Image (cartoon, rainbow, N blue to C red):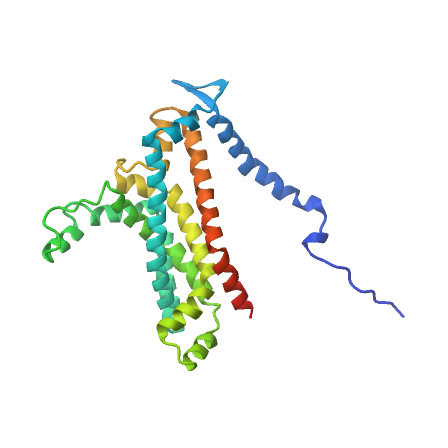
Length: 296
């Protein structure tokens, strides 16, 4: 008789540590290495032709004490927050409508949401340049309706940048929320309806709390991409809307001030992580309640 022993435990915790070597090496070479080089550059003293070997904190002092650069940081954050707010409201409504439709229409509408991601951001942004131009189609429509007296003045202003970023980043929010909605048990909504809850109350007490993970995921993606977006901000802002990506580009190319550009890049990374940390802390309670409710 052959004795059959109890199989041993298996899983990531029981795998040999050396299996992580390729992944850790790749992370060190392509993520940690460039980050350390950028951090080192940000601490160098800038000169006209590059940087010297002396270490200094003047780059960061200039960023956080100069009112102009503080306004650039604040403008970058509030534009990103405005884009997150707009994509959340519009994207949630669109995702909810898509997931509430029949399966065949659902697939079609999800395909329409994904199609813009197959196009270059330059093409989509150029389309907004045509639409938002001073005497473009949107200006003509508003003038015919009596809502606009003169030419449209959205390009070269934060409002135009927000509109373009909202359109470009909308699919990320829609897909994140729609993915979450697809896992909801429809019997919960039916049970709430049977107990006499109105549609608005069912949405606020059942659907919305259970879709908090999708909201958090979509908001995180949109905020990160809006903070670091360059093409849309430069094309729709005409270089007049100063945000951190534009500042970094100008300092690294036109000004040839690589240490200051590196300091601005490190600042953008720190501000992004800080804002995401605050957002995660604010959403921790609703997120935990939604996960607990889904498990029950």
